[in-house]
Length: 166
Image (cartoon, rainbow, N blue to C red; front, side):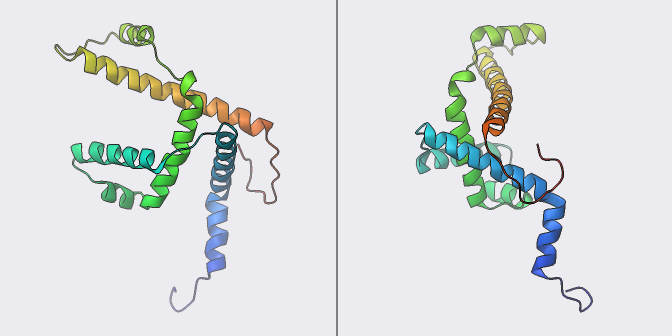
């Protein structure tokens, strides 16, 4: 209520649609396409895999002096939302795993092109970190292209227009 005047649930929903409708619809379409493709390929992600990823996140956050609960609260997110994001992301990772391998040659080229020098005695950790960074970059690029390909091959009918949808 604002000065005795109620704000209806319908007003809230309309405002949310106006402000974020396009992004929400895009997200739902992408999730649906990912779920369908994972199902076609017989990909199943276990609750143990999701829990392990959450433990990894918690470990990383605690090393930085934070906690998962704090981070989720700051992002206005609940644990179930994080679990859903991990589930969808793991399915995409599994689908694209053959396309995002990084060779030692790619690591060497990155080190050479950016003139990087590993700290003495930490060469392996240094290379592993670069390999993970390159893998993440490659994954993002491949995932984007793959999702665009899925979208272009899908029959998507829009019943509400939120502006240009990509």
